[in-house]
Amino acid sequence: MKDRTRFGQYGGRYVPEILMPALEELEREYDSVKVDSIFQAELREYMRHYGGRPTPLYFARRLTERCGGARIYLKREDLCHGGAHKFNNVMGQALLCKRMGKERVIAETGAGQHGTATAMAAAVLGLKAEIYMGTEDIARQRMNVFRMKLMGAKVHPVDSGSCTLKDALNEAFRDWAATVESTYYLMGTAAGPHPYPAMVRDFQSVIGKEIRRQILSQEGRLPDLLVACVGGGSNAIGTFHPFLNDPGVGFLGAEAAGKGLDTGKHAASISGGKVGVLHGCKSYLLQDGNGMISQTHSVAAGLDYPGVGPEHSLLNDIHRAQYTGITDQQALLAFRTLSEVEGIIPALESSHAVAAGMERAAEMSKDQVIVITVSGRGDKDLETVIDLMGVDD
Image (tube, rainbow, N blue to C red; front, side, top):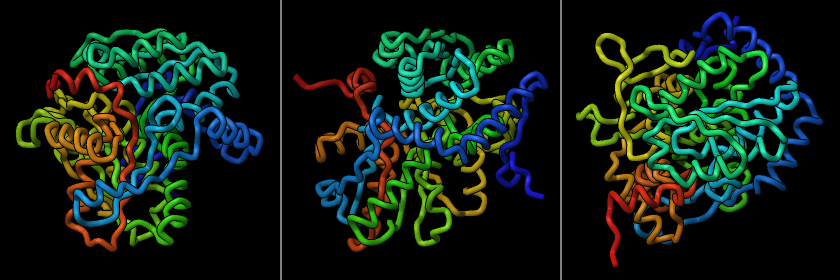
């Protein structure tokens, strides 16, 4: 009998006993709403009228000309309400929280987009939101911190460890364990203990489902390659999953290679990690020889995480998806290129996917089609980019 909590050997529930009843309750409630027409209709209404879905699939003519190969389309998740794909998962989970009768929501955030989306959904549904965020990420994402507070969320600075996403997750888990009866933990990525990886994937699969309809309408065929950035991997698994049974559609995940995979200063869990357990989930992790979690680095706060969702680990092992490391410098170049060539400023996370997609498109023929998921917009990263690149007078 198939273990529903796992993707091959990956996934599972590696959590303290106190959290098991909450996870089992969450699984039951989620199984229920998957087939509840009223819940699904309400979610569709919020997706359309509040979130702005469907997001466009845009043919990037000038970027295609620049690369000289495959026709490049951009899935514009940066145009979703809040500026990123995070809305898709958050709105679904926030409605589920409301259904379960819990009024307090906690979440972790790195780049601030998940925290922003959580604050947004909590405001519109009348929930109390508290967000855990590393102090390093708070310093480089001040605008998103202000947006969260403006919408009524409380932001808890986390100054332990590397002061980034991993440490925010640790604190959120501690909070949940202490307040499990009254609190809903709204996880932002397709990792963590079951049922979060599958649930987050399902909510994010709206991306891939829309791509299928849109590319068939615009090109009359499926794409040859889908590209998305991978930290924990929610936008990528949402892009890939609806095409799992289409062998002609390739998947390419762009991980954060930071200062280079050979430097140790990166956040590429599949390209540079090995199997272990973190935050309730077995997957590829960055760890030292003693199994201790390694410090990570990425110019993109949302990719600065030492693990990856378990389904990505399985897709890598069975060679259904490829994963490649993109350095900070490659991402910054892609950030500038897309801005200059198409007038679209991508998030630094998304810039990793743009870099990988541009590189691969140049190697493909002109009759082939590639879709790059632009997971978020770059407004939040302008201060970081100004500091790194400088600005011309």
